[in-house]
Image (cartoon, rainbow, N blue to C red; front, side):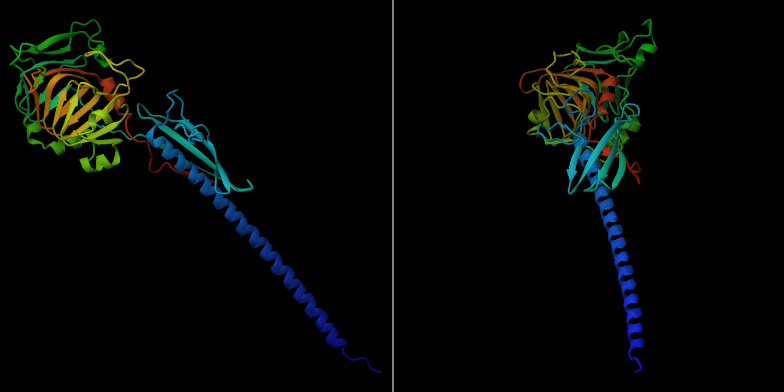
Length: 394
């Protein structure tokens, strides 16, 4: 009897084999694709963890890189809530991140390279990114003399203005009237100092000699400068700070306050860029740029000296304040009581040292130029990532 269905069985077996091969092939492709997808996801998670680490470091360093004042770069994660970073490792989602920092400062500007290595949940994938953060220069053009007033200077009270680092004390667009009081004097670096002119390169080391007083104006006074007088106050601000006021206030200022609360808000403010909005009276209880009280006319000790930049967007009455750094007043500056400034004072309109104020006190200004104080003030402000410094090491 002739066997039937053999061809059908053969075809069925062949089809079954082909289907099995196809199933195994598809299954292998799915497995491989799944592995590729999982690997990509883990790599992405590692990258996101690394980026999160950079963001955490930038956020921490924005305010201060050395919050415990030990001169070392802080860790960026604060796990115990005391405001000071204590670890450079953290869990990010299902992954983790480890951060390392390196001081790559250039000149006076603090620069920190942050390297952030992210890991996937099983640590099979890692990604490393880095970026440099720094405090941008808040004063591209520092004053090179202690006192500048765009319009005029009128000293009816007493004033002592000293510049041990040069031969210019006063720069004014209009009149510089210092002849109403016999307690007015300016001093410049003494050419007879044995170390002159080299001593002018180191602040407060040159001997000084009198230059101008009630009886005569010396060569240290540059008055009636038409270029200064004809410039606008906005131009003056742009020259010293490099940005228009509105941009600078949003971009650089770290302490923004008003005249009503300025005395309490700014007391002992160090390494800050301070913006006081509106008219203000800085009283004799206010010390800025030094974290301790100092005797009138005395320098701040090295350790608590962390100078600041003070910008007053309005008129300023100074009734005994002690200021270390650069002081810029957009309007008029009135000295109503004993006021000490170590660094430089720039006034957008008029400077007036009162003979007698409404409270019966006499205005007295003691102003000494100190380039170290001014350069130190350039450390003030927020740390920000440098554009173009981001790198991805795969």
